[in-house]
Length: 279
Ligand code: PEP
Ligand code: MN
Image (cartoon, rainbow, N blue to C red; front, side, top):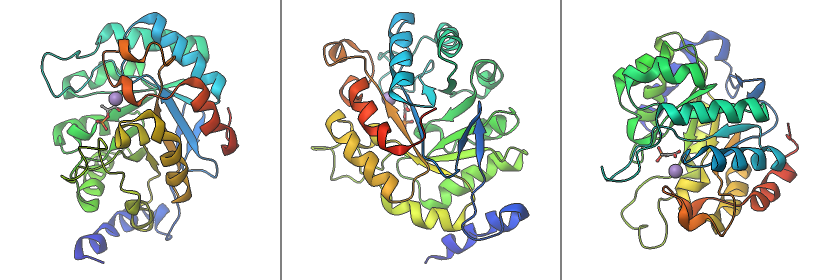
């Protein structure tokens, strides 16, 4: 085990209530416990694209047994001409989906100046892979009073990831959930969007009291592999899943963001059914 992994144990010692090896700090999001005995499923569209699309998918996710709703109003896109998200309008659509389904909302914030605004609509703030080391943003979400979903930077080491969590924790916010979403290796691009690093779960759970979930959607980039990778992640000890959903095979191609990797509501229901955590 590397010197850095050893250093990460400091995180447990810094938080005396989690000093026991293997104990997990349970994070409650709108009444749903992440890090408890049952795995949690957070599901929804990649991006909020319209009121109709978001409400249809939100209701379908609820019916499939997912406990929390995901959806991006602010989208981090590689190309500046790509759809950037609906912004404030997207947040309002998420609020409507929350009101109709009762599901807590998980949504990304990219800009430290918008943390306050996004916090008015989100039950949990998502920090995307590209923002994992945006330290001013980490400090700001640490002061937001909202639980945080911290995605792993696609080339972050375990200690870089845990130290990013410490930036949030230092501001007094311990309600942090880590999310493995696949890493870039240089050999995977022809067949997969990323490489799902399930290896990281066991050492992470031993050095860090935070729950860890897995995003099989961005890890694979392909809807047909999401169920298998979900099962693998849970077998490795993940506390839950973050899954992108499309409303049907027919509408997949019309989406402005990540249409290829979303599972249909039927596929989602088959992933969630055996988990025993249906809301
Ligand atoms: C997302 O969850 O939609 C997203 C943009 O993910 P990531 O930051 O992992 O690429
Ligand atoms: Mn996406």
